[in-house]
Length: 113
Length: 110
Image (tube, rainbow over all chains, first blue to last red; front, side, top):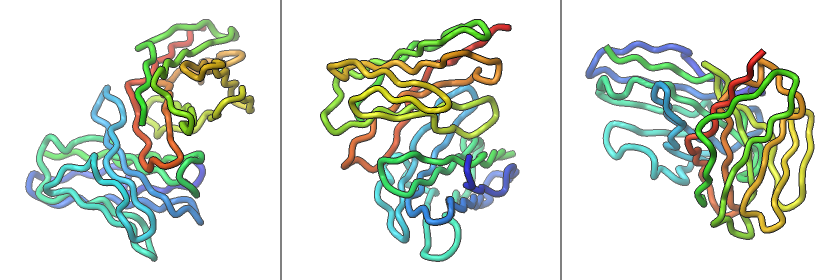
């Protein structure tokens, strides 16, 4: 996990609140991926971004979820009006080019109460 | 990404080699074979990747079948710290995402 920083590591939100998950990629990496992992399940692809552009969001729910990767600053995964089913670990990965080694962060564990 | 098939789980003894298989019968000519692993309560980490030739690095070796329809991740001497879920993924040059399957849960016995 060379340098991908995710924060917060743990986030608790009440139903209906907003959750903002941040991911700072490895310096110089312009490709960012977000994944969701439910307990005891595999990683589910959500969205792939390249600086300021969403390239593939086919794995992201159409409602309440959005992602951005601005020119300056971290990538943000935003979940509006959270529900209990959003409770999961959310991982971010970055890579310098599309088909190279990707580095993952330690994840943000979201709990909706 | 083309689909990969891996056994759900495998067991190994400490200090012994481990061969983790992956079938990818629908692989295309531009698909790279990537392996990642996820230790408990951690994010995935890159292990190795290759296209056609066998590959070696500090962590493991990757043996790719001549027809590329299968590959094997080889851990030369398993340690307790190698207990993890191992994912085999195909990534095409023109494909943007990196989609994980269920992986193989490796248990290492002392």
